[in-house]
Length: 219
Image (cartoon, rainbow, N blue to C red):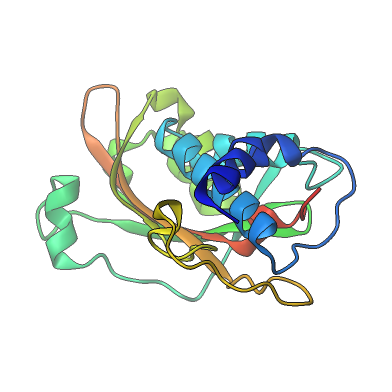
């Protein structure tokens, strides 16, 4: 398959992902091209919106991942991680400023789409926000919406590429194999700082997106 054919397939890839029933991802160039285009589309959407929660909710609805289009934050407790000292500068805080940690899985129906580590400065949130974060599983992005926050991405890394580097320049493509395409659990990772409307940093997040973002299969 030449580059022109692959690029044409790429341009149709996102449209091919509709709410209709699909086959599993097969290990061939067409599936790999569609999967890559979808990951790049999700990455661009995440980079252009402040709330990963709301972006995933739109993704869930657009691809019919669950009967109810709703992102649920499942708290993961007992795995507290201290904020590394060199990360305090990113939040503009000193060594003694209290920081809280929250690890959640963001799920749509039965699909865990993202696993997120979140360090935040409680003094920069309202008492009500802190109470909700302490006592419920509500997604962080929804809880702090009233801050009208913006998101500054520090890094965005594709952890898995279905096609090799240089594929668009006629680099050798993977040979097709019978069976289902093997997709690793972790496919995309973002690291970002959230800022209030007054441009004050209040949260550092590391979000790892899983293969479940492609759980709808290919058309």
